[in-house]
Image (tube, rainbow, N blue to C red; front, side, top):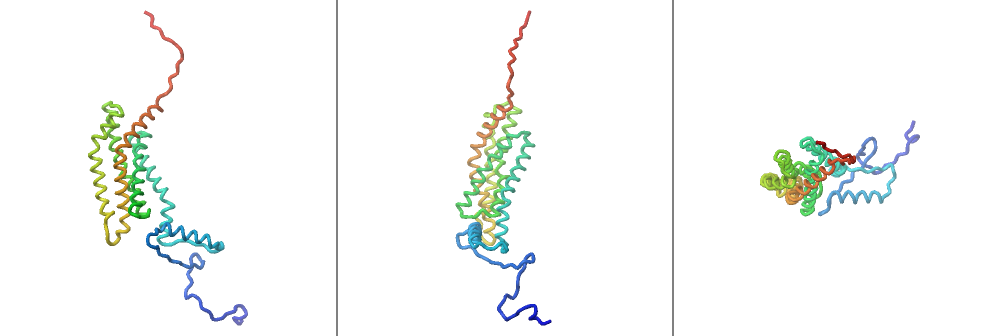
Length: 256
């Protein structure tokens, strides 16, 4: 059977190789980032351009390499942070046998997150996977300020019978020095990462910037906000624990 009976052929110019992925032909398009443009902005522009092309359903686009890792990190970062916060809450709840005091300790985390984001913005760094790791590390580092104060205040209330306001005030005075020592140790340890240069510094710098920025802002705020939140939650717990007393109207008399 001649070839012309089933096919028509003619010389033409074609690719030397045809790449396949999952039995489908694929074409790889590479791109570089312009100066001052982050990977997130580039991905948004590419997605917008793709939607404007109105490609048929048979053509599908996906990312590989660094862009794929970036999208994967964005899709899981909220779950990672939520899992870390829930784990810390459970451990603190078992430690203090309370549902409210762990919230007092976790109240220090928003200031650390805000400080890390502001530091990244000031130094013009992206919220990359490494920066996200730094924020998760801050969850374990920053809460020790509140743990030192709350732990001392609870011991003073339970063993010495002090009022909550007096106990937390004494905790702030006596725990100020160890809080500053531990914070400065962690901050100075992360400072070489934030200021370092050389090979691989672009990978380590976001980690150091997030830790330093989060520690600085949280250290300034938590020394003032933690006692306020402690007293507020303590009053809330007492208000919820007080059961209403029923008045039956009955009177008792003592007869000699």
